[in-house]
Length: 382
Image (tube, rainbow, N blue to C red; front, side):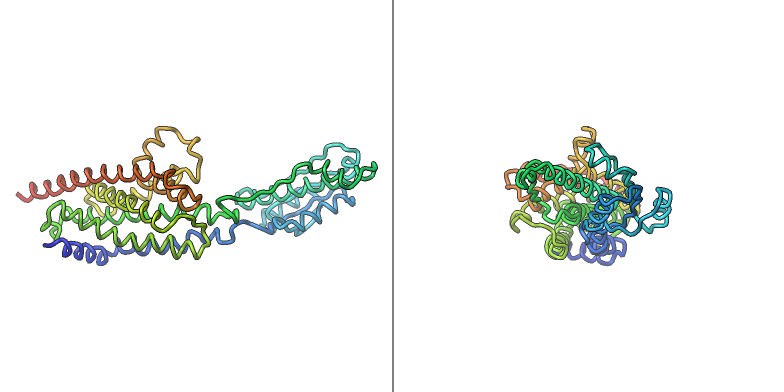
Protein backbone atom coordinates (compact mmCIF):
# COMPACT_ATOMS: atom_id res chain seq x y z
CA UNK A 1 0.00 0.00 0.00
CA UNK A 2 1.37 3.40 -1.02
CA UNK A 3 1.64 6.42 1.27
CA UNK A 4 -1.33 8.37 -0.11
CA UNK A 5 -3.42 5.22 -0.15
CA UNK A 6 -2.61 4.91 3.55
CA UNK A 7 -3.64 8.54 4.13
CA UNK A 8 -6.93 7.88 2.33
CA UNK A 9 -7.47 4.74 4.42
CA UNK A 10 -6.88 6.79 7.58
CA UNK A 11 -9.47 9.34 6.47
CA UNK A 12 -11.98 6.57 5.83
CA UNK A 13 -11.26 4.98 9.20
CA UNK A 14 -11.83 8.30 10.99
CA UNK A 15 -15.00 9.26 9.14
CA UNK A 16 -16.55 5.79 9.37
CA UNK A 17 -15.92 5.52 13.12
CA UNK A 18 -18.84 7.22 14.86
CA UNK A 19 -17.00 7.78 18.16
CA UNK A 20 -14.02 9.45 16.47
CA UNK A 21 -16.12 11.51 14.07
CA UNK A 22 -18.35 12.82 16.87
CA UNK A 23 -15.34 13.60 19.07
CA UNK A 24 -13.44 15.43 16.35
CA UNK A 25 -16.06 17.21 14.28
CA UNK A 26 -18.90 17.29 16.80
CA UNK A 27 -16.70 18.21 19.75
CA UNK A 28 -14.90 21.04 17.99
CA UNK A 29 -18.11 22.60 16.64
CA UNK A 30 -20.09 21.95 19.85
CA UNK A 31 -17.56 23.66 22.11
CA UNK A 32 -17.15 26.54 19.67
CA UNK A 33 -20.87 27.28 20.00
CA UNK A 34 -21.53 26.26 23.60
CA UNK A 35 -18.57 27.42 25.68
CA UNK A 36 -18.60 31.16 24.78
CA UNK A 37 -22.36 31.49 25.41
CA UNK A 38 -22.11 32.46 29.12
CA UNK A 39 -19.59 35.18 28.23
CA UNK A 40 -21.26 36.77 25.19
CA UNK A 41 -22.53 39.70 27.27
CA UNK A 42 -18.92 40.23 28.39
CA UNK A 43 -19.56 41.62 31.91
CA UNK A 44 -22.61 41.53 34.21
CA UNK A 45 -24.57 44.81 34.39
CA UNK A 46 -27.78 46.10 36.02
CA UNK A 47 -27.67 43.61 38.88
CA UNK A 48 -30.78 43.70 41.09
CA UNK A 49 -30.19 45.41 44.44
CA UNK A 50 -32.31 45.76 47.59
CA UNK A 51 -31.80 48.73 49.93
CA UNK A 52 -32.24 48.73 53.70
CA UNK A 53 -32.39 52.44 54.52
CA UNK A 54 -32.37 53.04 58.29
CA UNK A 55 -31.47 56.74 58.00
CA UNK A 56 -34.15 58.10 55.63
CA UNK A 57 -32.16 61.29 55.08
CA UNK A 58 -31.41 63.38 52.03
CA UNK A 59 -27.92 61.86 51.78
CA UNK A 60 -29.21 58.29 52.07
CA UNK A 61 -31.72 59.00 49.28
CA UNK A 62 -28.92 60.50 47.21
CA UNK A 63 -26.83 57.36 47.76
CA UNK A 64 -29.76 55.22 46.59
CA UNK A 65 -30.17 57.35 43.45
CA UNK A 66 -26.45 57.01 42.69
CA UNK A 67 -26.66 53.24 43.11
CA UNK A 68 -29.65 53.02 40.77
CA UNK A 69 -27.83 55.21 38.22
CA UNK A 70 -24.77 52.98 38.27
CA UNK A 71 -24.46 50.77 35.15
CA UNK A 72 -23.64 47.83 37.40
CA UNK A 73 -26.70 48.11 39.67
CA UNK A 74 -30.47 48.42 39.53
CA UNK A 75 -32.38 49.17 42.75
CA UNK A 76 -35.51 46.99 42.71
CA UNK A 77 -36.87 47.51 46.23
CA UNK A 78 -36.43 49.17 49.61
CA UNK A 79 -37.16 47.09 52.72
CA UNK A 80 -37.15 47.68 56.46
CA UNK A 81 -34.59 45.11 57.65
CA UNK A 82 -31.88 42.70 56.54
CA UNK A 83 -34.10 39.64 56.96
CA UNK A 84 -36.50 40.91 54.29
CA UNK A 85 -33.54 41.52 51.98
CA UNK A 86 -32.32 37.96 52.58
CA UNK A 87 -35.77 36.59 51.71
CA UNK A 88 -35.76 38.47 48.41
CA UNK A 89 -32.32 37.11 47.57
CA UNK A 90 -33.39 33.57 48.50
CA UNK A 91 -36.39 33.93 46.15
CA UNK A 92 -34.01 35.22 43.41
CA UNK A 93 -35.87 38.53 43.23
CA UNK A 94 -32.56 40.28 43.91
CA UNK A 95 -28.86 39.43 43.93
CA UNK A 96 -27.55 41.77 46.62
CA UNK A 97 -28.38 44.39 49.26
CA UNK A 98 -26.93 47.44 50.96
CA UNK A 99 -27.63 48.60 54.52
CA UNK A 100 -27.49 52.34 55.19
CA UNK A 101 -27.10 52.75 58.98
CA UNK A 102 -29.04 55.14 61.16
CA UNK A 103 -27.17 58.43 61.58
CA UNK A 104 -25.57 58.12 58.14
CA UNK A 105 -26.05 61.82 57.22
CA UNK A 106 -25.24 63.11 60.71
CA UNK A 107 -21.97 61.19 60.99
CA UNK A 108 -20.82 62.19 57.52
CA UNK A 109 -21.43 65.88 58.20
CA UNK A 110 -19.48 65.52 61.45
CA UNK A 111 -16.64 63.95 59.43
CA UNK A 112 -16.98 60.70 61.32
CA UNK A 113 -16.48 57.32 59.69
CA UNK A 114 -19.57 55.52 58.46
CA UNK A 115 -19.90 51.79 57.77
CA UNK A 116 -22.08 50.65 54.89
CA UNK A 117 -22.92 46.94 54.94
CA UNK A 118 -22.92 45.09 51.63
CA UNK A 119 -24.17 41.58 50.99
CA UNK A 120 -25.17 39.34 48.13
CA UNK A 121 -25.60 35.91 46.61
CA UNK A 122 -22.08 34.48 46.42
CA UNK A 123 -23.24 31.42 44.46
CA UNK A 124 -22.56 33.46 41.31
CA UNK A 125 -19.10 34.93 41.68
CA UNK A 126 -19.30 37.30 38.71
CA UNK A 127 -22.64 38.73 39.86
CA UNK A 128 -21.46 39.03 43.45
CA UNK A 129 -18.24 40.79 42.51
CA UNK A 130 -20.13 43.17 40.18
CA UNK A 131 -22.51 44.20 42.97
CA UNK A 132 -19.69 44.75 45.45
CA UNK A 133 -17.66 46.70 42.91
CA UNK A 134 -20.63 48.90 42.05
CA UNK A 135 -21.50 49.57 45.69
CA UNK A 136 -17.92 50.45 46.60
CA UNK A 137 -17.79 52.94 43.73
CA UNK A 138 -21.11 54.48 44.80
CA UNK A 139 -19.95 54.77 48.42
CA UNK A 140 -16.72 56.49 47.41
CA UNK A 141 -18.59 58.95 45.19
CA UNK A 142 -20.96 59.80 48.02
CA UNK A 143 -18.02 60.42 50.34
CA UNK A 144 -16.45 62.74 47.75
CA UNK A 145 -19.75 64.61 47.38
CA UNK A 146 -20.01 65.26 51.13
CA UNK A 147 -16.38 66.40 51.29
CA UNK A 148 -16.95 68.74 48.37
CA UNK A 149 -19.97 70.35 50.07
CA UNK A 150 -18.03 70.80 53.31
CA UNK A 151 -14.98 72.35 51.65
CA UNK A 152 -17.12 74.74 49.60
CA UNK A 153 -18.95 75.76 52.76
CA UNK A 154 -15.59 76.63 54.34
CA UNK A 155 -14.92 79.12 51.56
CA UNK A 156 -12.50 77.20 49.34
CA UNK A 157 -12.62 77.79 45.60
CA UNK A 158 -14.16 75.10 43.36
CA UNK A 159 -10.80 74.45 41.66
CA UNK A 160 -9.03 73.98 44.96
CA UNK A 161 -11.83 71.70 46.17
CA UNK A 162 -11.56 69.56 43.04
CA UNK A 163 -7.81 69.17 43.61
CA UNK A 164 -8.25 68.32 47.30
CA UNK A 165 -11.07 65.81 46.81
CA UNK A 166 -9.57 64.02 43.80
CA UNK A 167 -5.83 64.80 43.62
CA UNK A 168 -5.19 61.84 41.30
CA UNK A 169 -7.16 61.21 38.13
CA UNK A 170 -6.90 57.62 36.91
CA UNK A 171 -6.95 57.07 33.16
CA UNK A 172 -7.30 53.29 32.84
CA UNK A 173 -6.63 51.91 29.36
CA UNK A 174 -6.85 48.08 29.05
CA UNK A 175 -3.89 46.85 27.04
CA UNK A 176 -4.90 43.33 26.04
CA UNK A 177 -8.63 43.16 26.79
CA UNK A 178 -10.26 46.41 25.63
CA UNK A 179 -13.78 45.36 26.61
CA UNK A 180 -12.71 44.02 30.02
CA UNK A 181 -14.90 41.01 29.25
CA UNK A 182 -14.46 37.31 29.79
CA UNK A 183 -14.80 36.28 26.14
CA UNK A 184 -11.43 37.72 25.16
CA UNK A 185 -9.91 36.44 28.41
CA UNK A 186 -11.15 32.84 28.60
CA UNK A 187 -12.20 31.71 25.13
CA UNK A 188 -8.81 31.75 23.30
CA UNK A 189 -7.12 29.47 25.81
CA UNK A 190 -10.08 27.14 26.20
CA UNK A 191 -10.54 26.69 22.43
CA UNK A 192 -6.89 25.68 22.09
CA UNK A 193 -7.37 23.20 24.92
CA UNK A 194 -10.38 21.77 23.05
CA UNK A 195 -8.17 21.22 20.00
CA UNK A 196 -5.58 19.53 22.18
CA UNK A 197 -7.99 17.22 24.00
CA UNK A 198 -10.06 16.19 20.96
CA UNK A 199 -6.89 15.45 19.01
CA UNK A 200 -5.55 13.27 21.81
CA UNK A 201 -8.87 11.46 22.15
CA UNK A 202 -9.25 10.94 18.40
CA UNK A 203 -5.78 9.49 17.89
CA UNK A 204 -6.16 7.47 21.09
CA UNK A 205 -9.44 5.85 20.04
CA UNK A 206 -8.17 5.11 16.54
CA UNK A 207 -4.98 3.43 17.75
CA UNK A 208 -6.49 1.58 20.70
CA UNK A 209 -9.17 0.07 18.48
CA UNK A 210 -6.74 -1.22 15.85
CA UNK A 211 -3.98 -3.04 17.70
CA UNK A 212 -5.85 -6.34 18.06
CA UNK A 213 -7.66 -6.28 14.73
CA UNK A 214 -6.85 -6.93 11.10
CA UNK A 215 -6.76 -3.99 8.72
CA UNK A 216 -4.76 -1.79 6.42
CA UNK A 217 -2.40 -0.89 9.29
CA UNK A 218 -1.03 -4.43 9.19
CA UNK A 219 0.10 -3.85 5.60
CA UNK A 220 2.23 -0.80 6.43
CA UNK A 221 5.58 -0.30 8.02
CA UNK A 222 5.62 1.49 11.35
CA UNK A 223 7.17 4.61 9.83
CA UNK A 224 4.67 4.80 6.97
CA UNK A 225 1.70 4.19 9.24
CA UNK A 226 2.85 6.90 11.65
CA UNK A 227 3.53 9.37 8.84
CA UNK A 228 0.11 8.72 7.26
CA UNK A 229 -1.60 9.23 10.62
CA UNK A 230 0.24 12.48 11.25
CA UNK A 231 -0.63 13.83 7.81
CA UNK A 232 -4.29 12.85 8.17
CA UNK A 233 -4.83 14.41 11.58
CA UNK A 234 -2.64 17.36 10.63
CA UNK A 235 -4.87 18.18 7.65
CA UNK A 236 -8.03 17.83 9.72
CA UNK A 237 -6.75 20.01 12.53
CA UNK A 238 -5.42 22.61 10.15
CA UNK A 239 -9.06 23.14 9.18
CA UNK A 240 -10.14 23.17 12.82
CA UNK A 241 -7.52 25.74 13.84
CA UNK A 242 -8.49 27.90 10.86
CA UNK A 243 -12.11 27.67 11.98
CA UNK A 244 -11.25 28.67 15.55
CA UNK A 245 -8.71 31.40 14.82
CA UNK A 246 -10.65 32.76 11.88
CA UNK A 247 -14.42 32.40 12.08
CA UNK A 248 -14.80 31.96 15.87
CA UNK A 249 -12.43 34.76 16.82
CA UNK A 250 -14.21 37.10 14.40
CA UNK A 251 -17.69 36.03 15.56
CA UNK A 252 -16.86 36.50 19.24
CA UNK A 253 -14.82 39.68 18.68
CA UNK A 254 -11.67 38.22 20.22
CA UNK A 255 -8.62 40.42 20.02
CA UNK A 256 -6.02 39.24 17.48
CA UNK A 257 -2.58 40.79 17.10
CA UNK A 258 -0.41 38.09 15.53
CA UNK A 259 0.28 37.75 11.82
CA UNK A 260 -1.15 34.75 10.01
CA UNK A 261 2.31 33.39 9.21
CA UNK A 262 3.37 33.57 12.85
CA UNK A 263 0.24 31.75 13.97
CA UNK A 264 0.75 28.98 11.43
CA UNK A 265 4.42 28.66 12.33
CA UNK A 266 3.66 28.35 16.04
CA UNK A 267 0.72 25.99 15.63
CA UNK A 268 2.69 23.58 13.42
CA UNK A 269 4.75 22.00 16.25
CA UNK A 270 1.71 22.18 18.54
CA UNK A 271 -0.41 20.01 16.23
CA UNK A 272 2.53 17.75 15.47
CA UNK A 273 3.47 17.24 19.14
CA UNK A 274 -0.16 16.64 20.15
CA UNK A 275 -0.71 14.13 17.34
CA UNK A 276 2.44 12.22 18.27
CA UNK A 277 1.45 12.30 21.95
CA UNK A 278 -1.94 10.85 21.00
CA UNK A 279 -0.34 8.03 19.00
CA UNK A 280 2.04 7.26 21.86
CA UNK A 281 -0.81 7.28 24.38
CA UNK A 282 -2.92 4.99 22.16
CA UNK A 283 -0.24 2.32 22.53
CA UNK A 284 -1.08 2.09 26.23
CA UNK A 285 -4.66 0.95 25.61
CA UNK A 286 -6.54 -1.79 23.81
CA UNK A 287 -10.02 -0.60 24.85
CA UNK A 288 -11.48 2.26 22.84
CA UNK A 289 -13.22 3.91 25.78
CA UNK A 290 -10.12 4.36 27.93
CA UNK A 291 -8.41 7.26 26.06
CA UNK A 292 -11.60 9.33 26.29
CA UNK A 293 -11.97 8.71 30.02
CA UNK A 294 -8.35 9.58 30.79
CA UNK A 295 -8.27 12.74 28.64
CA UNK A 296 -11.53 14.10 30.03
CA UNK A 297 -10.26 13.67 33.58
CA UNK A 298 -7.09 15.57 32.72
CA UNK A 299 -8.84 18.50 31.01
CA UNK A 300 -9.38 20.69 34.08
CA UNK A 301 -5.90 20.11 35.57
CA UNK A 302 -4.34 21.04 32.22
CA UNK A 303 -6.48 24.18 32.06
CA UNK A 304 -5.27 25.34 35.48
CA UNK A 305 -1.65 24.40 34.79
CA UNK A 306 -1.62 26.51 31.64
CA UNK A 307 -1.41 29.62 33.84
CA UNK A 308 -4.15 31.91 32.52
CA UNK A 309 -6.95 30.67 34.80
CA UNK A 310 -4.85 30.23 37.95
CA UNK A 311 -1.52 31.95 38.70
CA UNK A 312 1.48 29.67 38.22
CA UNK A 313 3.03 31.15 41.37
CA UNK A 314 0.33 29.39 43.42
CA UNK A 315 0.94 25.98 41.83
CA UNK A 316 3.57 23.60 43.29
CA UNK A 317 6.75 23.50 41.22
CA UNK A 318 6.66 19.71 40.66
CA UNK A 319 3.29 20.10 38.94
CA UNK A 320 4.65 22.90 36.76
CA UNK A 321 7.62 20.72 35.75
CA UNK A 322 5.24 17.89 34.91
CA UNK A 323 3.00 20.22 32.89
CA UNK A 324 5.94 21.10 30.64
CA UNK A 325 5.47 17.63 29.09
CA UNK A 326 1.92 18.49 27.95
CA UNK A 327 1.79 20.20 24.52
CA UNK A 328 -1.28 22.24 25.50
CA UNK A 329 0.58 24.14 28.23
CA UNK A 330 3.31 25.81 26.13
CA UNK A 331 0.80 25.98 23.26
CA UNK A 332 -1.73 28.02 25.24
CA UNK A 333 0.91 30.22 26.84
CA UNK A 334 2.54 30.95 23.49
CA UNK A 335 -0.71 31.66 21.63
CA UNK A 336 -1.97 34.01 24.34
CA UNK A 337 1.29 35.95 24.34
CA UNK A 338 1.59 36.03 20.56
CA UNK A 339 -2.01 36.58 19.51
CA UNK A 340 -3.70 38.30 22.47
CA UNK A 341 -0.79 40.32 23.89
CA UNK A 342 1.10 41.10 20.69
CA UNK A 343 4.41 39.65 21.90
CA UNK A 344 7.40 39.53 19.58
CA UNK A 345 8.47 36.19 18.17
CA UNK A 346 11.61 36.32 20.29
CA UNK A 347 9.44 36.29 23.44
CA UNK A 348 7.64 33.07 22.53
CA UNK A 349 10.55 31.37 20.74
CA UNK A 350 11.44 29.29 23.86
CA UNK A 351 7.89 27.92 23.95
CA UNK A 352 8.05 27.17 20.22
CA UNK A 353 11.31 25.27 20.68
CA UNK A 354 9.77 23.46 23.65
CA UNK A 355 6.96 22.24 21.39
CA UNK A 356 9.49 20.96 18.86
CA UNK A 357 11.31 19.18 21.67
CA UNK A 358 8.04 17.59 22.79
CA UNK A 359 7.33 16.54 19.20
CA UNK A 360 10.72 14.81 19.00
CA UNK A 361 10.24 13.10 22.36
CA UNK A 362 6.76 11.86 21.53
CA UNK A 363 7.98 10.72 18.10
CA UNK A 364 10.41 8.35 19.78
CA UNK A 365 7.73 7.17 22.22
CA UNK A 366 5.23 6.64 19.40
CA UNK A 367 7.70 4.57 17.35
CA UNK A 368 8.62 2.46 20.36
CA UNK A 369 5.00 2.04 21.38
CA UNK A 370 3.83 1.02 17.90
CA UNK A 371 6.71 -1.43 17.54
CA UNK A 372 5.85 -2.93 20.93
CA UNK A 373 2.14 -3.27 20.11
CA UNK A 374 2.66 -4.76 16.65
CA UNK A 375 5.34 -7.07 18.05
CA UNK A 376 2.88 -8.31 20.66
CA UNK A 377 0.34 -9.02 17.93
CA UNK A 378 2.78 -11.03 15.82
CA UNK A 379 3.93 -12.95 18.88
CA UNK A 380 0.34 -13.73 19.83
CA UNK A 381 -0.53 -14.90 16.31
CA UNK A 382 2.46 -17.22 16.10
